[in-house]
Length: 239
Image (cartoon, rainbow, N blue to C red; front, side, top):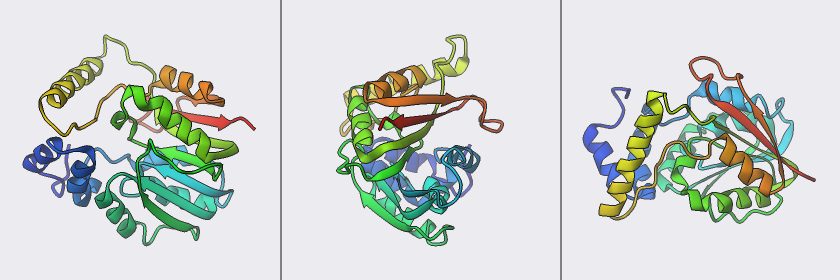
């Protein structure tokens, strides 16, 4: 599962006993060699839904990590691509890895909380990958509200998620078991580490986005194998 250059079990244990911010600071130098990074085929296919090169002015990648999505976003932007992440260590890696990213739009990296966005009508596109498991369910409305505020009228929020799995799927019970273990960990150990599976699935995402005035388009069967179960959601902020 892990590349030979990836983190050791001891390093993963240290991360698991840290806060989200500190945990990703620790993981950052080896993050590219973990299965936690969103694969390039998934990023590429999602960004194809945005449009051709230089078709938008400004884009925001929320919880940008080491900048994987920003590498695909930059060629689409005429002016600027902004990445926001809680972890300083991840942003430092993004700064290094994006040095040769294609495109000429300005790259801006900002340390910040996804639940405390300070942007108003500034972006044509917002994206986010691999971050929803770090958002508690009670905080999801605030996340969507901030994204809606950051987008210009007609702007789009693109992300990947999935339809709820069958209870007959072994992966469903593995995810439920992991979530239960994480709740026990957070009840017994501080600071908490927020990471849960089966979050922000299509029905929940649609409900929250439509409540904020988005038109929601769920695009299935676009991902290449083995990622075909994932759905691309394109949510457009009504003018």
